[in-house]
Image (cartoon, rainbow, N blue to C red):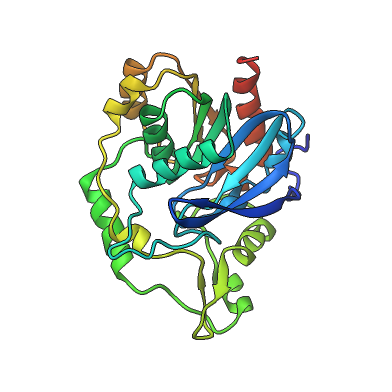
Length: 286
């Protein structure tokens, strides 16, 4: 495994679409067929490529796939008015996907918004999951944060005349990450596209923010029985001690790890540290 300071190399993958709830959702497959399944979920306004720099750390032992949520990346947008991008809808998509792929005893890894989706999924659809890793998620939401999402969703996004302009301007949010600029530019090239009007924008339906709903996630943890790792970025303000205490009181099997030299986007900031923390946890389950 490369050292934490080494420039990471993105993993190779194949991709295909899976029809879920009437929409074509894009799935990346990093390989490892026949091994224990691992499904990776990205955060809000991101996509499956957030796992390109860590997937190779697991394919010796796992069949690793990553999903683009509806409205994100190269998955279809919800055509309904208003569209449904709720945590419950994403969790239902994950459930249908796992049934179509016949995933059993699988590992679920979920970053940021995906962490909230995964907690809803794990609580509402028991029976298939082997273990859960939630990566630097808020763990719970506030009405103030939901209101801020709504404000973002109602604003027009920035647009650019060319791909190079888009890539040059691209920044992950929140800012403050430690990823090399080359990594951010790699992600940028896979996060934008040219729309019908000729302008370049993010590959995300901004309505994913406009109708974000409040979910009190703490009660979900009383129903989550599988082994769980909560992985925090050392430099991030998410995963507060108060939230961790509330969750472990309801789900005492939950473990915790902090990844150094990383802010919110751990898989980009410190891929080796991410792999090490996840594998240390997963090795205890064998």
